[in-house]
Amino acid sequence: MAQRHSHGGSGLSNTQEAGDRQRAGQVQALAELIVSPTGVNVQPGQIVGITAEPGQEDIWRAVAEAAYVRGAKFVDPWIFDVHVKHSRLLHADADTLTYRPPWLGERYRTMGELHAAQIRLTGPVAPHILDDIDSTRAGHDVLPRVPESQEMIHKDLWNWCVTPGPSAGWASLVYPDLPEAEALARLWDSVSHVMRLDEPEPERAWDERFSQLNAVAKRLNNLRFDALHFSGPGTDLTIGLLPSSEWVAAGSENVDGVKYTSNLPTEEVFTAPDPRRVDGHVRSTKPLQVSGGFVSGLEVRFEQGVAVNATATEGEGLLRTLIAKDEGAARLGEVALVDRESRIGALDTVFYETLLDENSASHIALGAAYPDTVGTDADRERINISEVHTDFMIGSNDVAVTGVHADGTQVPLLRDGNWQFDL
Image (cartoon, rainbow, N blue to C red):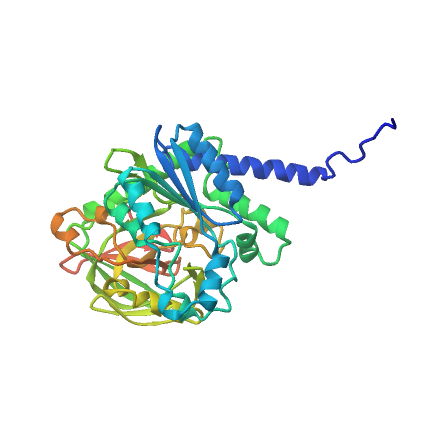
């Protein structure tokens, strides 16, 4: 028998093999961080749910394995395909676009009853898939967002974490001038940096950042402002706070005492505004991605807490549909401050993904508030309630943030992206 000789081994170049090894290491490091106490903090014997999309397979599979290594009882991935959503938006009767089959909500309620862990991978895997869909029509279908998920969060029944899942489609959106392979490698490098995976001990690096953020939140709580004022290009906005509005930073705890980080990365301190005391106008400083579509050039005018006018150069119909979702969708449920120490902001990159972009700049959110951002039962009755929670960025180095006391005294908070007090 003639001997067969190998020429070229695997057929991959040394450069490609090195790139593949690096990518595998980044995927593994990300997965381990997500399930660790720094992230969702999977507990032995716990059920774990993962929401992801096609194109993120290597990540959610690595997350599943890492969860099992930590002792998970069962890992249940729910893979949402935005291409199928496109088919629905293109062909389904308009009256059916708000329909959600009951088992989707029941899945989340059951996971809440079982005190499961919930992980969601973000990042637009097919960023232009809805470009041919009327934005007003697209706004009626908010999947994969399910309101029952927000219900479980408000009841603190599970530990949860939203975190980035790089994909080729997302990379091509962020770095359109690069070849696909180079764009994906660069996106992974950027995500690894903002997730602190490039540190010798990522969890320790996050502990240091969490300490900084919690110190800021403590200082803001001690100052007890009545309102915040944002001023800058296209922005003159006053946001009233509730008497017991509590500034919160990294670190949450569920009803079982399990500590976790709900957004990773996180660079913000945030609280619940008074949904009836927001006045002025504001211009978004970055585009936002919502329900599979994009909104850019956003400008909103508020009167007595209500967004009475909203315009955008792109995606205006989508935004208007979301604001009309329910009574609370046109009021604020969150105000968050981000300083220039954010690793995300320092990259000076638009990621077209709210999780990353909102942690690069101060932002506000139309819709639902988080109950743990107020300190009294009376104020929990006053926070905003809605099916939606739509963050958009309003901060930059050109936007000044000022704290306002009840007697009108003003205290500078952020100037040129820097905190104006000594921690």
